[in-house]
Image (cartoon, rainbow, N blue to C red; front, side, top):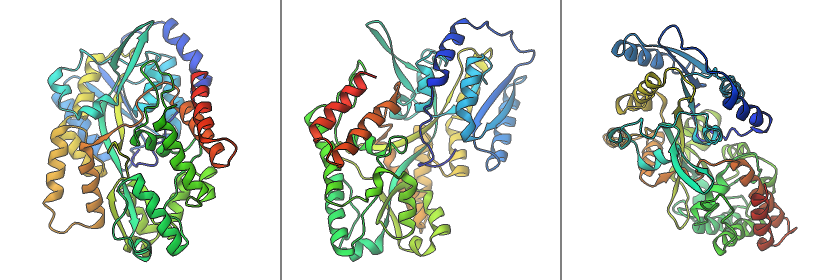
Length: 434
């Protein structure tokens, strides 16, 4: 599924967790299939990309007889339950399109084929190093831990800052903020000059992880190597204080405590906020939904902290451990994600590729455009951020619980129910006692 905001974490594992662990260890291994067919699941890519995948699959089959590929596209809302059920029943497809966050939850249960040693090092080095790391997880047996690879990077998006030039000019601001420190100053000036808010960011635990990522960008280490809370530090307290102060100073709408990121979109399109953190492609939606706002909109790099880190969202391909077509599945996954095919999909879907060569070719093509539209400029900015971009929230078990502990305690501090120091301590204790 294409789009920054829509790549929300899929994290409801409590109901099937025990069942999955038991079935994976106890269920009998199925018999090999009668024909060498690879079953490939994608996430909500039909019908927009049907022609692309039909051609891709036909090319693969021509080059790799007698292998055949059966493509199944699963609606976003159904993927979680379908893949959980399929893996538990040892009836999973051979190659699955997921994202590292969702896939990592099953990686901790040994559901995916471990790729270390199976992907040749020269092939591995073709992918952006920080993006490859997004599909790795630290697996521990007692006191012994090792990093294992569970997926292959596919397509990417990075956030940009879409901004209302008219609102910034009304506040006497000549350029959008680049850092959180600048953002606080801009928020005060816009409120003073226009009575409007600079931006909207949600603190709803089940919604966007943007605030959680901001802590990492501000230099906060969330968990240590053993998985325990590592944010009860001076850096963590300073980051909590940043958001609490903005709220208490009236520089954030009260609805940040109850409304999700969708509200930010609606406010921007209504001209009520000056800045929107989103994918470059959202400029097309603004043109459709709010033409007057689109005319005064432009894009800038995403806001970051003193670390200069920038967020990237990743889609990857994983191979279930119990596949009877491991070698063929890996061959197909590497074919789908090679430089040539990633560059082709980048053009078809207006996303970003994850191989080094494809990124360089994509940027070169953008730079050759004589007069870029606002959307093309935003895409160029998005691509240029890949050098600094990484998945700010590494694959880890119970990430949704970490976000919930931090967001709920941030809310308590914003409402004056706790001091910032107590909120940080309580959030750390809740995580450690999960």
